[in-house]
Image 1: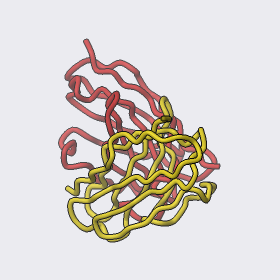
Image 2: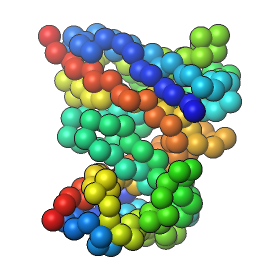
Image 3: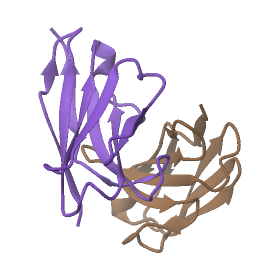
Image 4: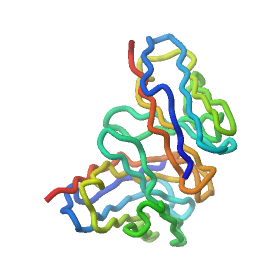
Length: 107
Length: 120
């Protein structure tokens, strides 16, 4: 089973700042990595698939990059609604697995 | 717009079987793979298993001996059964659609989730 390690565990930033979240895989997942956003009491929201493709309706301030074992989710300029927990997920190896999450909080 | 809705008991006794349904609207169940995913309170996400409309399934090895997923295409819904539950199975259970024609995939549509507590 592939282990995904996200860092940092918590990121404290202000609206308007740039956020950079990391996801590292225990072995190569090629480009088969997705990102999700989850707010308290809500289901995860699908953001990015195959490392760099935005899902339908996702604002352009969200971007993904990386391949192999190292991936990044970047939010170019934080909006108040972006403060949430973010998870990465790989679909390269069986079973699909998720990272433990990064909490993006308001500074 | 595809919508998923979980339903089932919110409280299950230890050693009994957890049973949940997921109703799909706004699209046919006969076109994608469908999964169950769970999230213990305050923790991360764990994939449980998937089903295809044909009935083919696959389960997380960590739960395989206790999990069964079935589909009812006439009702556009699929179901989860998890046997011999313990307190460790307390979680929010989500149903979700695979975002592509792959058994191992990302998940583009999710239900709102339902909390199942295992307690006597």
